[in-house]
Image (tube, rainbow, N blue to C red):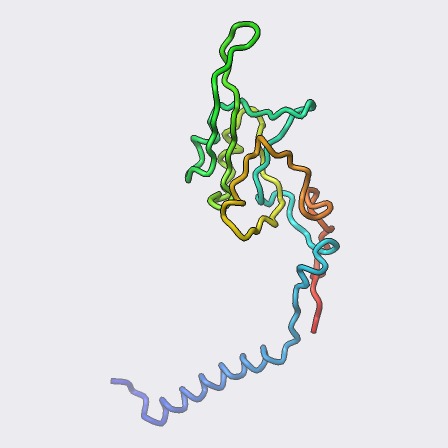
Length: 175
C-alpha cells in the first residue's frame, strides 16, 4: 500500500501532465525545417565517399572486365545476391582458363556488407556511393554487371561526394 494519500496521487498526476504538456507546447512552437530533397539535390546533397550504395564492376584500360570468374565473391556473399556463370575455354597456348559468361547481382537482396569486395583478389568490383536505385519492379534491381558499363552517379559529382559539406549549416529551408 502506498504512503501517499488519494489527493497526493492526483497532484502527482497533474504535475506529470503539466510537465508533458510543457514539452509538447515548446516543441509545437519551435520553427520546423524541411529538407528540399528532390528539388535541390544537385546543388546541396552531400553523400559520403565511403557510402555503399551500388556494386559496380571495374574495367581495365581496354574496357574489359577485370573479373576472372574465380567465384570468391559469390562464396563470401552471406545471402546469395551474386551469381556467377562461367565456362572453361582453351587459350592459344593450349591452357584451359575460366571465362566469365554472366555476373548477376541482385541489388534488392544486397546487405551492402562489402564482404564480396574484400574477398576479390583482383580488384574487379567495388561499391560506389550512388544511392538512387529505386524502381517500380524488383526485376529491375537484378543487374548484370559484366554487360553494363557504369558511367557514374545519378547526380553530378556524386562519386566525389556530391555537394561540398559545410559544417554547422544544414541544407534545409525553414518554413
